[in-house]
Amino acid sequence: MNDTPAAPRSAAGPWQHVTVVGAGVIGASWAALFLAKGQTVTVSDPAPDVEKQVHDQLNEAVPALRALGLPTDGLDGNLRFEADLEQAVAGADVVQENGPERLDVKRDLFARIERAAPPGALLLSSTSGIRATDIAQVLQQPGRLVIGHPFNPPHLVPLVEVVPGEETDPEAVRRAVDFYTALGKKPRVLRKEVPGFVANRLQAALFREAVNLVVQGVVTESELDEIVTSSIGLRWAVAGPFRSFHLGGGPGGLPAFLEHLGPALESQWRDLGTPTLDEATVKLLSEQARFGATVEDMQTARDEAQIKVMRVLGEP
Image (tube, rainbow, N blue to C red; front, side, top):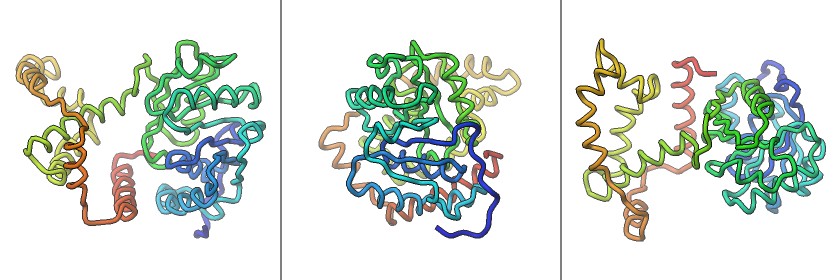
């Protein structure tokens, strides 16, 4: 992983030793960011080919990291692997868990992590929808656990949803926010626990209607993607739904918008579809999922375009 000389790395605050539990797409992406920020990373995953998988994904992340101004020379110099979970977390300052989206698996992982990690270690989960309250029921100190849900890929997209559980210690939340901020991320603390959190719920709502429109034959998948990226995708990159509709109300702002256009908008809510991912729907969606390029090439193009957008918007 050679690169032109870059600025020296600096560890994110006091969190020098990070253990990444689970090295799939999300875990490996986190590992790439942590390494680029100068942290020592231990990866724990029982997969027999985990080292190859992680190194392959690190190589794929290098162009994006470099474009973000992060050093990538010798990226894997502070990387080690430890299949034994207890040994992997024994010296960790931070544990970022990325295991399967199953409550029983996460409970088992965190029960073991809690017993073996140092008392002051920050315990974080990348879960995309399971509540911290539910996971922490097996912990002796449930206040230690915080959800740190990234938006894929974590080494590139700024958002991290920080979601405390019912018993999460406010100090753990503060430390999680400090940790992600030091990494250059944009942590957002949710005021209430809801399954799926915020970004994924919004994504699910839009995708449900996208599937409905394709199933109804209104548009194809490619046509719908073009519509989104040429309209609301551009709009929401600079102003979210509420601000956009506030501007749509003219001088009267959102109150005027709701008064004049709210009834029509509400009528559309009642007409939105409720498709199911049955066999016929999955077959149709799969048949249309031909985009004229490999997944790898599409990922590269997506990351390059995403970085350009982030630069225009002044994102880190």
